[in-house]
Length: 126
Image (cartoon, rainbow, N blue to C red; front, top):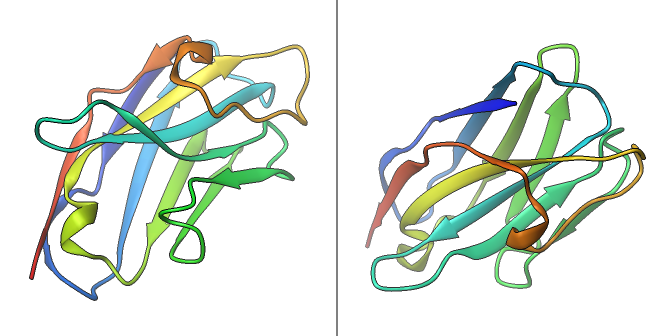
């Protein structure tokens, strides 16, 4: 499956921004989807994940209550709504997909994912 992320940009602290990631190729509702981010000089870190059927979500503690992951299987798209953005949210955001035999499982480890998008840069100014 191929992934194309979009929606990044420059915003001020406190703003909201939604990222999108469109999947193409051999997609199905059994794909777990996730978002990761990588800040300058740091390793890639988990942000949020959602199960294939969209019923289960999981978040990194640092974004809990501010970010929301969702998916539209009819459009093969996963979203990351980010509110109350902070300068420390500045990073390249990557979406990822994990093929699975089950649609009620999410994945929070980067090593679990099979496919990665190209990343979209989000810069939050103070």
